Length: 179
Image (cartoon, rainbow, N blue to C red; front, side):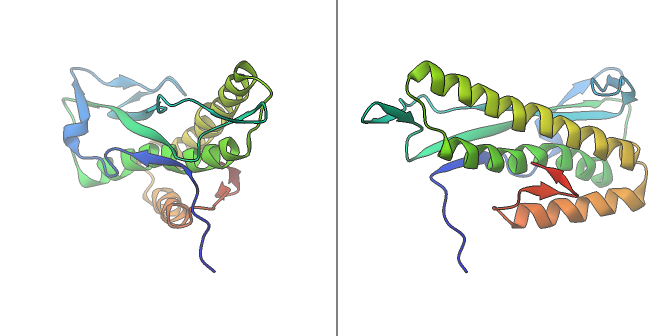
């Protein structure tokens, strides 16, 4: 069965992180989630297109073609080796934006409102749920389980889960957690 193509999409730019995407920090970095000092930290930012909502008979919705762009916000401590293992760990943090972004896109495609302000409110609530709440829960659980990438066993488990979830654009969960 062929997957239905969504008109509202998310696009990561770049898709894969490289060390050139990181800002170099002179000291260890404080992870805001658990207040531990870490060698690298990756989160994401996002931008929405500057296009007007569609309106049919006074009901507002998002346009048929609408792409949310994801960009990395990444830092690495200057005193640490920039290894493939560390980059892989940080890539997982960045990939959370894509998988939660897909869930956000599905929700935005269903949204309808009687006014622009109501549509904006519903959009902000959906962004908060997917990009902040759910992404935050995933980031914290991942770092707890992998001990910020130092537990190879759990690092592999979470990496395999991410690979499977990225391969399925209709996935609603990863490792039992909602996107």
